[in-house]
Length: 385
Ligand SMILES: *Cc1c(COP(=O)(O)O)cnc(C)c1O
Image (cartoon, rainbow, N blue to C red):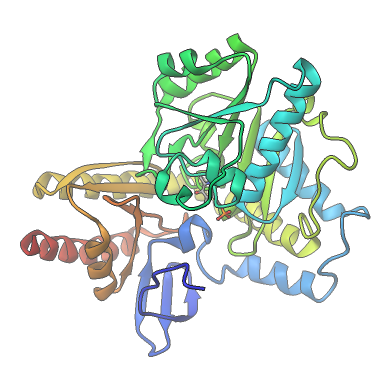
């Protein structure tokens, strides 16, 4: 169906941050498939794990024990400090699970009136009916009424959130760095304040780390930058390096609200997806990719700052780790197309922000190459307005 306005290029092969199209032309991929291929394309460890698992067992179902799923859950628990995991297949599904768990936990504890979830302006939480309702952006909601009851939207402001929390409120759901909303880090002060506010009001704090999780911000999870432990975290994009897999992690006490039959997924956490996730988590540690992401993120941000200093139509460079954005005073789509012509794949975030998501193992040399291409595209855009 006509749900995407696709760019006129088809890729047939990838390696690291390189892609090749049908004509054999080479590109540098600074999208990572929208924060998915965080280890780059065709990462040997992931490829080997998938080969091995595919030859053994793809799927059984959650009717039976899945030892690999338990191992990945234990690894995620060790890395996050959140001891319980539920596996699904996408970011929207992980957020659906979080919404259901927050409601179930709160209603068991406080009664059925406690069901409302607050989300922030310019948020993005997915495309299913519940998650598109959680997404506070009219563009994504138009034509899908009636939306789900039980959601309310608030400004990115602690006083406004405190005011909005009422008898019915059971949780606040936020992205620690808003991705689609324009690569906007919410910042330590706000997120720490939000944690304190949720504790004071006895409501849950849910972090949507579908984009920020799995090393993207320079920590395994975005929340680890702020010393804030949410009650529930959702993951997907980078967890399988391209194999669809999502997860919801939660504190023990919150997770206890789910009992056999409460929630489920046919594919969720199957052996193939878990083999991918296990390989991803191990590779990030073995290859010390978090420190590379921090270093390369600083370098990239510095180069973007300099561009923003040089061109008045570039308003601001911002981001965290290897989730970096450049805010324009005009629509960003033409600049994305120009970058493509120079062989660089980049993304937009909203209408006015350029979003750069190189893989966590990007090298300094490739970063410089990409910046050169971006500089050419920016210079051209500067003269075309
Ligand atoms: C991409 C994204 C989602 C939706 O993930 P899907 O896998 O497309 O369902 C949800 N939240 C955030 C923050 C995202 O970036």
